[in-house]
Length: 121
Image (cartoon, rainbow, N blue to C red; front, top):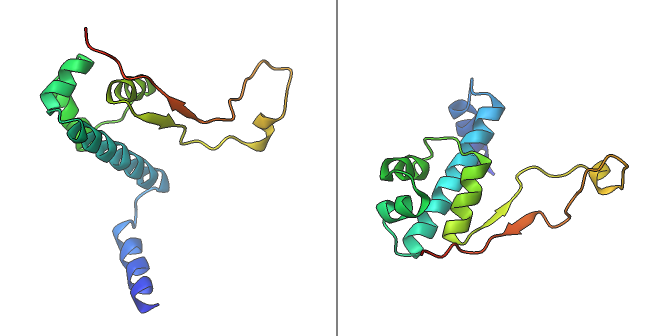
């Protein structure tokens, strides 16, 4: 129990003065960065090879993998497609979305989107 108390005290001190939203953002960026890097390495690709497949610079791929940039949804979809990864919404739908409404909003209960791997020409 004392170890947990020490860890909580440490985390409180480290995050003091940081907005909760910034902590969540850093966590998401770090998770995405790690997943991109691990998947790229598992495929045996260099950062330069991934960059070429995406039409971006190796420097941008490096910044992605160091969690130094925000990702647009378009970028995440393209990355997932090229790397053969799945995307899942980080936002949990509210219960009201699950109920039919006459406002033309469609809810897809399966939040995970599977993308086909893009084949090179």
